Image 1 (cartoon, rainbow, N blue to C red):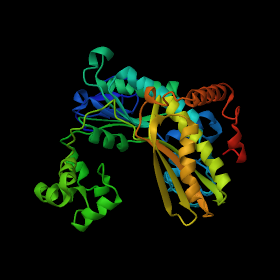
Image 2 (spheres, helix red, strand yellow):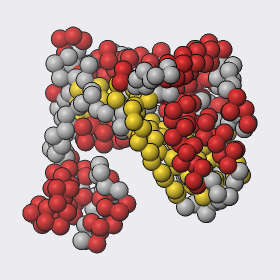
Image 3 (cartoon, helix red, strand yellow):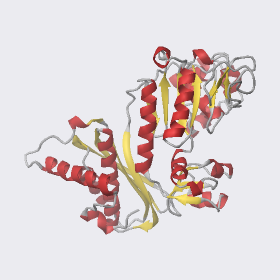
Image 4 (cartoon, rainbow, N blue to C red):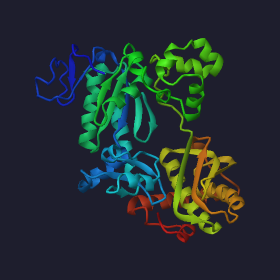
Length: 424
């Protein structure tokens, strides 16, 4: 949100004494203006159409084309560029539906190694601003820049505008930034001016801004909770603002009180750099349904390798393995198994997942298989020594494979079990 009378920040030359619609120093119209901008310290940074932006960065011929990142006619959209979004394409949409809406789209298979590399580069720049960085996903994070003005010789808004320019120059993608006095409003602000945006939203503006929005706009309100609230006659955030907090608490417990506060833009959550990741997983949707147990197991093995690689990269381990299967008629089956000790080894994850798969691979046709690991902790606790030194041998093998793939590419080494299926 902007206010006409306040001095503004030029996002191109970083002059923060701009009084008119254009910067008097460089002539840019990219001015962010807000009376409280100089005092705001909480930010939400979101990489714009992240996966698609990386693909366009690496292939300039895609610059003006609608790009969908996903896989296969039966897969789903991982993300898409803004050209495709204008046509109605959304993340998690089935690929066949996305291509009906945007038949001229260029479909690109995900390249997660590239996305992780870019994410790390962006996060490194965030950490140069403040140690208080709370990642939400591979492409977004909260930052708290309170007390950093002396370090950067500029208010937090100026430091963030400089950061956005550096990301664009060094990483080759754009980000959108929202600033506020708390996390909830900062995340909302980052959506106001996308893509390549920068907006601020104060607690005083929040009630009027939020009032016409649907209930589902609030953090933590999914479809089921929204339906429950609608049965009580609460369809907009304005309805929540007019509701008695005591009645909300009586009907919906602590969640009702939380929503009452959020409806007015109040949020006391702190930016937490130690926010725990709950699970690490990978899944694959098949081009054609698979019934064969061995082929399912081979697909599962590749996914276990991906999960183990992500654990290794993050220097964490887990102890609860979950198998996910989706039948041809879209019924979901999940099974979980707790390991005696934490692991980051693909072989141990696969052993647990395959044992569960054997009980489900009964000729049922499946369209998707996935595996994840939860109850995460430091990798130092993983795979303790065993009498036969099996864990140590497996770790040595998987480390060597990871190093070879890092040096020569993901297809450089293919372990025997995975050869039973084509590479995705």
